[in-house]
Length: 285
Image (tube, rainbow, N blue to C red; front, side, top):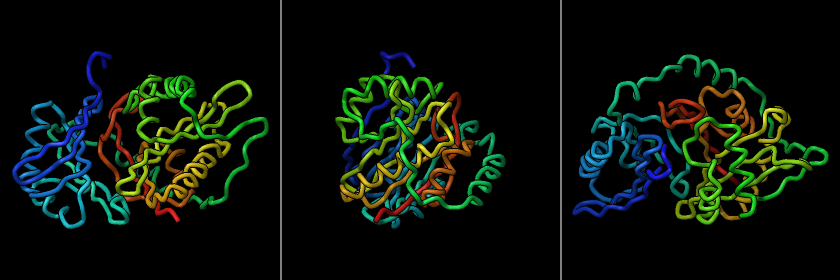
């Protein structure tokens, strides 16, 4: 997407019967409703209008438990459950599509096969050791350029502009924490936790490891470090959306004690196409 066009816009709209907080995510052609209050019928009608006006082909709503069946009655479908998202209360991921190609998964059966293999793995709750001559630490603002270079190397496309140092810095200012592992010569692995302090949850995301350093437990090591940081900040729910076609990342979360709670069809543009994302959740101590 050309840099002169917005990648996303966060807005709050107050109607006569509702308040709704949403993101116009142009990069991924979706409207994401993060919070709302009021009349669900009016909210449904309005968000469909907004999505159509902005040519967005998917709407997804984090619904409270009391409302998900009302959203269902309006034509939404339940794609997953964010366990513990609302200060311990579940959020129900309700989706609406305005495009058949967007609605249709191209790899669902293959993804089911991968998930079955992942769920048969043994758990690995132990914390791996930091590799010799490597350093594990929380990222600082001056690491933004190296982080952006890592993401640019790994991902052909990505749901957010993580290949831009200024965007990485912006996420840090907004409260996202990054942990990284570096060798004496380069940054080799990183992951982040995007924290929602209002509802005491965090999305574990932006996971990347250079190919030469994979299968060494680095991502589990980063997840342990991030979870410790979240617990210290009184965050009670951790969740992640992992590419359903990626055995490795799904295995990391399952073996770390996360549970599978659904699959979001063609949820974002990652690697080189719109991909289905598996939802993993874990309640932190």
